[in-house]
Length: 98
Image 1 (cartoon, rainbow, N blue to C red):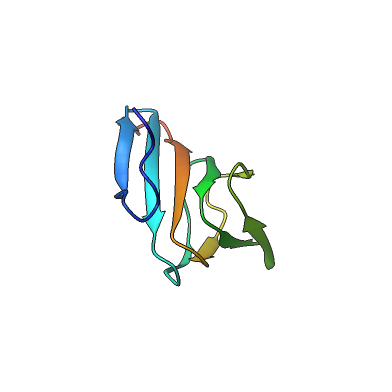
Image 2 (image 1 turned 90 degrees about the vertical axis):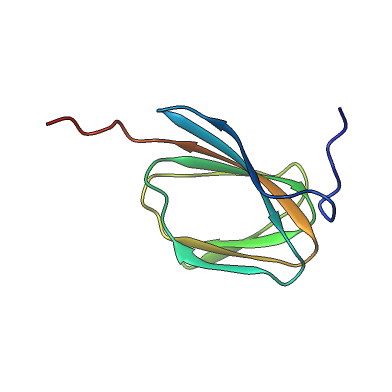
């Protein structure tokens, strides 16, 4: 099945287990996601479009095929410069047991 174009796709959780979440994130041109943190390590791969990803006070442009890795709890933000689609993989921390 072909991957939908960024302008036609919708954000969705593709895989969710107790230890892993894989999400398709679709952003319209100009959409900004303010600074936030993920509870576990993440990878972000640009599938379509162009986004600027900011972390540690540095910005990096992501184009299709580009991939980055962040440790858990690293603040980051992003802005789409075209209709864009990202694949975000999050390793979830272990559930706390008491």
